[in-house]
View (cartoon, rainbow, N blue to C red):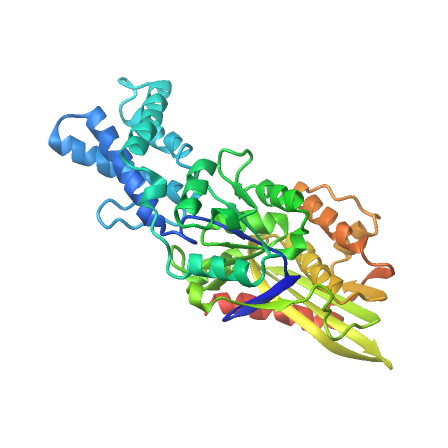
Length: 407
């Protein structure tokens, strides 16, 4: 049994596992971490000065170092509070203290002080108790497990595993999750390892998995693992999320799903298919996108049966070419073709897949291995280089996706 997940601007049809982020996705980010950051900054300021004006200055400095605007409470999308665990934020705070008063606090003393601020903040505030739900999130989780109990749910968070589990238990959904991974399980996100561990543990393919998050780390983790990622707008805007390579949705009420039996196949169960893919980067590296088109060849005529284009963040041309091939093969598997012809206008990638050239770049090697995992599932295929003018459909999809981010 699997589901098709649908939102206003897209869908994901072969879903067996949904991996959620916690803060900013299913619970309000500022309800927990803004309060915790404020508590840490206040305690540290009191340790550093007893003068009221200096105390205010230190508090402001430390909040900014954490990625919080002290005047407005706005949270920086690229700041430590969003991208680092509570423990790792200590390094940022310690750097500020040591840089400004090195004669009083060595680096080791600064770090020791900021680590102590964690204990104090946790003593004053329990993250699980502070958490406030995002409207509709837990209702969606309960509904999907009620209607499709076979679907697996997991949680990967920058919070600790204990805090995450207690938060889920508080809202009555812990038993609905098959796996919970916090930042104490190393390596943590944005490494792709948490996703890979969860899929291996639950015996589910990465291609059957979608991540629902809200922040850059969720996107980085997912793209590195080759997993579809959908992000809730709020902490970041639609344009910011899509520029990083994610699809986006505005609220949980928008998200829907359709139940599909395990043996249901796409109606067009074609015997002979052609896959043409293209990737493009404006800047190399720079804003990048992928496009792929699946054709059925019948009586010397090529009919389009599926096409897709999407942005993937700032990447190189070669990375985009590999991602286009990977996403195209992920879709091809659901068609179960008897014969497949893969055509690309990147001669380098074609020769690497044929093992005529070696893959030396470590990032490309990860994608190369994932491509080959899909190719092993196809009985008869060949891959060949084509001229760019024969690949106009896939190229157009790349450019449409890139142009959309500039509107």
